[in-house]
Amino acid sequence: MSVPPTWLRVIAALVGGATLSLLAPPTNLWWLQWFAYLPMLWALHPDTPRSNRWLSFLYGTIGVGMLFRWIIHTIVIFSPIPWIGAAAILLLFSSVFGLPYLVLWPMLHPMRRRLGIGWVYALPALQVVLEWLSMKVLLFPYQHGVGQYRVPWTWQLASVTGVYGLTWLLFHVNCVIGECFYRWREGRPMPVRAIGGAAAIVAAVLAFGAWRVRHVDAIVQASPTLRVAQLQSDRGMEWRMSHGARDAWNEWVDETRKVTPGSADLVVWPEGASPYDLNQQGPRENLAPKVLGDLAKRGGFDLLVGGGTRTREPDPEMGEDRVNVFNSVYWFDAEGRDRGHYDKLVPLPFGEYLPMAWAYPWLAKQLPIGDFRAGTEAVVFDTSHGRIGTPICYEAVLPDVCKLFKGADLLVTVTNDAWFGDTANPRQQVMLAATRSIELGIPMVRASYTGISFVSEPTGAILFETKPFERVNRVVTVHLAKIDTIYGRFGDWFVLLCGLGLAGAAAVSRKPE
Image (tube, rainbow, N blue to C red; front, side, top):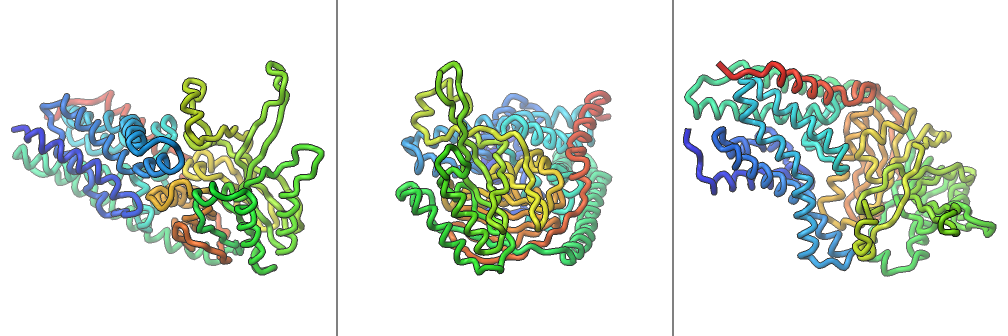
């Protein structure tokens, strides 16, 4: 079996890696996922393990770089680093976050030699485990299966297996097609059973999806409703940084006053909408919470506000107070009372704090990165309209964090995507955050400073979706239907199954006859 020219294999790896950005928003060519990994399956050759590793590294670096290319925009706009430095940072980021592919692809032909046709099941299982580990270690999750979030019938599988089940299915179909190509190249019969098995699995997923959409949608439509005022600004971070805090504050106060009293049950201000800390810090009265309470009482609605919390505690070593800053959501009820707040549990790395800042203080001074502390408790607000959990921004893409809001009837996630401009980032955030609704069977309201805002239902349907940098002030209806899901009850059982399957395959692996 001859080895294709190196330059052709490099092109295939580049095309395969670049294709990853087409699977995600804004293009989201979901249908392409069913054969998107074939260029890499062609580029890898059983007799060239060393070049296979380099091609895999190239694939991962290009793939991650194209997905996260919006990093350059944010760095150039909001830091003194020039574009060439931003490109270097993206390259470093991509080479690190692309390392899981350096584990995945070089295993293809060793698996095929030892497992025979079993590799079409094992390689997808390895991808699932790598995605799960990446989320735990690398902190910026991206699961391939999430690209199906706009396809109702396939998307329902996420309610059972989490998004990892879709990752497995997509890779399995690609691997079966790849095996057909390998058999053709080797002059061997086609793997008829594997083809039939893959077709049967896809058919079963589609049948289940069609049934679940009808079943769950009927429950959703018959459920109680909540009237939510959807507010969104058209002014980005450049405007905010060139204006005073009072200007940003007045914008949200004015928009809230436009909400007709009695027309909404809940009004939501996004992350950072209040430029002022909202907790009482000393003997002098904090006027900002009083204004917010008056707004809620005047309108007869509950008010959730993204703002800051600042506390001070004695530092015996330095002989002065230590200041702790938290990213928070405050709840004011319809009587205007401050009913408590939630402090973000997982601050965003490189956004709200600089990991290991002590190791490079010079860089910390150059970058406009905060020093936010982590909260300690997932607070669920027990409102008169239901129990509401409020994961903040990045937390909405982390299933383990959203699960901590136990007993919530609704998730309201506030975020500020204005830092990323009109790039792919806000659209990718929508894709990742909306996944929580179908996995956990709970509706979600996403309130973004400049968009994208939306409402998602337990079927995965995304409603009232706004455009980036579109001024919005409207009342939308949210159905408060909670659906029991297998994933919500048992969590990452499918990941565990894949891990056990890989362990079993390793124990009994054999060379094909």
